[in-house]
Image (tube, rainbow, N blue to C red):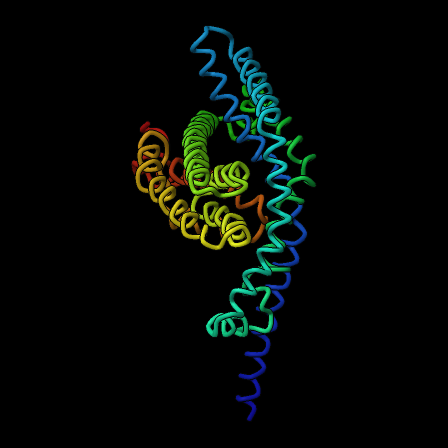
Length: 354
């Protein structure tokens, strides 16, 4: 009896220790999460600076001006293009977005009515007591979708801070690079400079590739929707292009509002909408992206998907946006610091062979 009691006591003690450890870990993560949010904004600012720096060097090499002048020209050009885009397309896009959001609840009810006409639809609705969650309706995907727009508006200040960080870092990258390098021991500073340079090169090439992909997806989707007679063509095409910034998960998210709008406007539009999304993303995934990756960087799909899920669970939607460049940064550090320096092996570092 004594041995059994001691065994059960040790098992209970082990369980309590394990549960307590997990509880403490959860509390620590909850406490430090705001720190990660600050890191998130800083990393987004770095991405903006990498983009502006790359464009600034391009302008510098083309018209023979100083680097800072080149970056200034880029910033002013992007600002003017934003104003022109807002003037010519902004009002129409905002109008279409507003109409689309108003249509989504009606599309939700239409889906329920259509399912209730069929036995298999009724069975689907009764698979769970929380039928709204099954169809991603009130409190589900629809709520998350509309919440995405309201959250985007609510984070305008954060976006402004990110842009300011990116502009300041792009105008004087040497200042911040020197400050980061001084954090390393004297004998490691050259290697740190080389690693940071490799990270910047890889991020720059990845950004170029993603923006080309976004432009292609947006244009092809818009043309397809226009030919099919889809309402809200401009807003849906813009959304498809913007969300394609996030590989794999972005196109899935872009398909949801298009499907709901099609259901509300004309259920038969689901056929061309489905064909357009499949054709565009097969074309993008099997032709455009591989060609771009030959000139930029190529990341394993499974690694990207897992990174998006893990970072998204911890940091939310904003985390999903930076999951890929963050993963790219971590991979370059592993390649340079662990594989090359610690293991002494050679490796093809992302972006260096381009």
